[in-house]
Length: 97
Image (tube, rainbow, N blue to C red; front, side):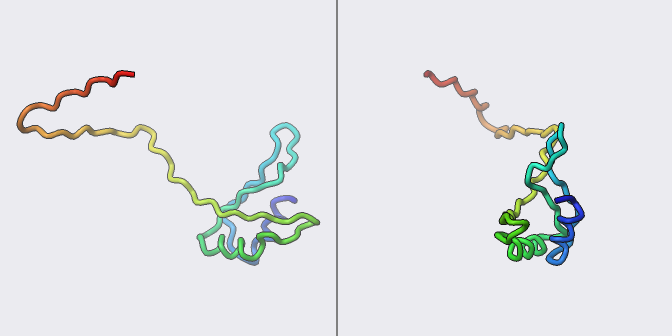
């Protein structure tokens, strides 16, 4: 299956933003799965309901919805907060093992 066939299969059920068919680096043969970015979650649910388990060329399709994880912060800034009144906070001693 190429990108155009996949989009034609999915398009009646939802709007596709991007598509990525995963291929072997050396042979460029499809590994059997792809990632599609949909316009919104409702479109993704419609595609899953319509096509999950459907037969395509003798093989059942498996559709999973994967939530996008937020991008990690490159250099997070940590702030240590402690009370400034009274006696200073003593550092903890390491635990014995």
